[in-house]
Length: 359
Ligand code: SF4
Ligand code: SF4
Image (cartoon, rainbow, N blue to C red):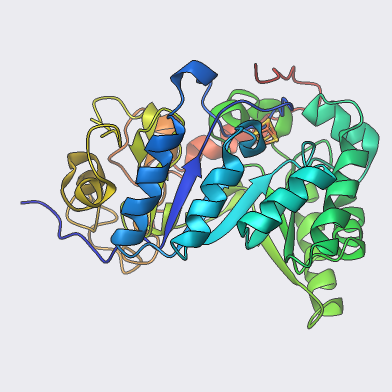
């Protein structure tokens, strides 16, 4: 029996491209990056936006790679605005010139999320591999604020920069962020490949948590700080994407519809393409979106657990990456028979472990 499909997804994550001027060691893009020639055409994306609005999706997040590497970004933003979709641009900011900002504003962009690799230039260039990126990002933040748009700044934390979390929060506040995301690296894609060199120690995690809690109290009423800890130190998993096929649909640069951005790693999952099907049809009827939707698919210990409709058994892609099976409880959960694996990965972490930059 197929799982009943829920209300339409709240948001569409439009991964426009894998191209990016940066080469972050923790990038969540897949190891096999799609070339420009394999990307969806402008007319495909325009149709996808039409279909999104038609089924009641409210928000579209333009991401990548670097979505500003697409020449048609302004066209897509303008179309989203025409359809009354709330549009968010997730960008590294290095291409956000005065001219680009003016065009995006005129097209109707609603919000910009700007990523930083560190509070300091040296650390930022070590991670992103792009000389001069930090200055460009600071300029981008000023342009966003001058345009009167809400700004979220995002900082990804790992073993090499965890000790500068306080300075990152100060930077985000100075730049006028209404929201700061302090997100420990999630170990997918390039992050998983580089896990040994990126995973922080327990002491680093505890210190970052203290700094974030102190800043939250101090900046209450001024800005919001979202804090994401590394799964590997958690006792319970996160509800990946708010549950499989429950709240979000991710479209890859080639047009595959994904219930989770790493779902392409799951073998034998027939991922539908927006080139062949409407997103309404994919959401309601595709095998891929139904496979882990709801609770029927769950084995024990999830099936009888009172958190099964809170975390939905955690992340299928993480279960696969760590155990070789996508249909078991996320090993992050203390109740999982595979939970002990995580202690071994934490033990292996080493600041001197070699890191491989994304291509
Ligand atoms: S994580 Fe870094 S390399 Fe990956 S898309 Fe974002 S800015 Fe580019
Ligand atoms: S047993 Fe399954 S549903 Fe329960 S907390 Fe763990 S992962 Fe979540």
